[in-house]
Length: 418
Image 1: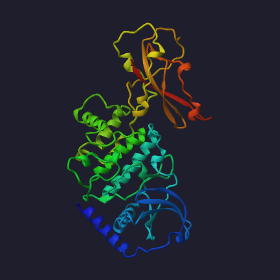
Image 2 (image 1 turned 135 degrees about the vertical axis):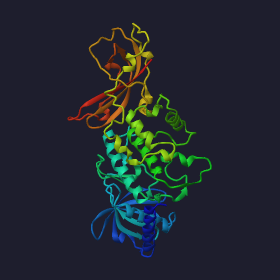
Image 3 (image 1 turned 90 degrees about the vertical axis):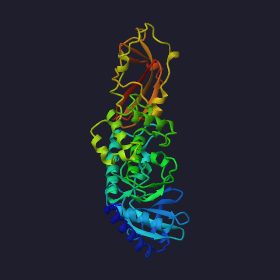
Image 4 (image 1 turned 30 degrees about the horizontal axis):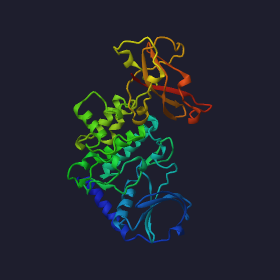
C-alpha cells in the first residue's frame, strides 16, 4: 500500500469511528418533506426530498438495515464525503442519520436522472455528448485513483445528469467503492462491465485495482455510443468477447462485427482501455488523447468504394425485387460491410444498365439529434451512383418525429453487395 492510500485509509477510518458514535435516530418526516421516490433497489432507495429547515432540495439515500451493516453504511457515506469535492462527483451534504428501518444520508439532487435514461436501445447517443461524458468521467476516475479509491461499479446508471446535453455530469453511488489493494469477492458489480480477471479459473477473491474502473469505463463508452453491449460477459466462453480478444492479440485484419462502426482512432482507444491484461490497461484519462479524432463511422460521408474496387463482371439487367435483402444486423450490432462515400442520384432511369443488387440500410437523422436505421428495398448500384426508388422505400419519417420546422434531414447508407 503506497503512502497516499495509507493516508486516505487513516482519514476514512477516523471519520467512520467518529460518526459511529454520533449517528442519531430520527423520524425522517420530521425533518424532510418527501416528494417522490427516484429509484429503488435490493439494498437501497433514493428519495427526492426538501429539507424543512432550509427548504433545500436534495436526494436522500436510504439503505435497509436488514441488508446493510452499520459499518458498510458509514464507509459508503464517508467515502462519498471524501470524494465530493470534485466537480464531476456527486456532492455530499454532511447529513447522515438513521431511522427505525434505514440508514440515511443526503446528497446533491440530480434534476435530469442518470445517463442510462438518455440512451436509445440499439442506437446510443450522439458522439459529441459521449465525448463530453468521457472527459468528465475520466477526470472523476483520475481523482479517485489519486485518492486511492476504486469505484468498482462504473456504469451509466451511476452517472447522474445536471443537464440533458451532458455538459455537466457526476459520478455517484459508492456502495462498492474500496481502497486500492483491498481484497474483495471477485464476482461483485454489474456483469457486462466486469473485467476478465474476475473470470479467471479458481478466482474467488480479487485485489482492488484502478484497472477495474478503466475496463468498466471502456465498456460504458461502447454502450453509450451504440446502445448495445460489446459482449454479455468478458469471459473467453462468450463468443463476442472471444472474437474481440482474438482480434486484439493476433492482429487479424478482420474486425469483429460489433466493432465495425468505430474509426481506427476509436479502436486504438478501446484497445488501451479494454486490454485483456490489466497491467497493460491505460489510465482512464488516456481518452483525452482521442478527443480530436472521430470515434464512430460517419455513414453520411462513407459510401461504396468497395464496390468500385470489385473485379466482378457487371450484369446488364437490373435485379428483381426478390433478390433484395435487408441488412437488419447493421441497426442491431453496428456491423458494416463497406466504408465509402455514397452518391445518391435521382437523375438516372430505373431501366438503365445495373451492376449489382445490394442490401442497404439507411441511417436517417435530423439536426435535432434523433436518428434510426431503416432497411430499404429496391436499391441498385450503377456506375458507382445510387438510385433509391421512393415507391419501395417503406420509410415513414413522420412517425419518428425526426423533423421540426427548424430541423433538416440527413441520410447515410451502409451497403452489402451481393
